[in-house]
Length: 262
Image (tube, rainbow, N blue to C red; front, top):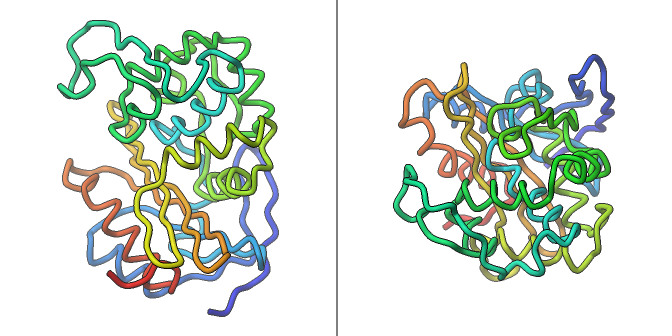
């Protein structure tokens, strides 16, 4: 795969990506799936990006539940929870999904994207500490506003697909400003699949109730000693679009030769 040099700079609240290589294969996949969105892979060894829709990849959107990755880091680093296995209360209120109506740990909550558990965590962290850590992590626009348990679901926090891949790369290398053992724990929490010489990590998100609604799938692949952070986001025109995120993302990773064939 031929990669091209990327220069990235922040301007007027939007990250401008240069040196991008469009992937015709990934563009075809988005067309076949009928998705309006972007997909980007960061190759940190070559410091380059490849993907679909360069312009959209640099636009910031509400992160929704992809923020559960930094939220976990902050909760553990701040001492809001003693470990990823400490049980948090969901609050006892009816939830959109029955599996959310249970007290559980972060390790249990993140695979099912349990919103009330992570809202409880955010309230424990508190607004001032949350803002301090989000700023230190250099996460997107780093703006959490005044509601500590809603800012990643409704804004004002926003991040681009390009920025997601850069943040995740720092996580894979243990380079974020939190203890390395905490970063290792959170990496383990988002492991999805693994095989001979490779592993896939990821987290979904869906900013429901927004106009427009934007859905995410972000993560990284490790393969033969290399790391490939990726980010996909789409505008949700109907509910079925959300179900296409992971299959389309996996197909894109395979088309780029990063994820092995099933």
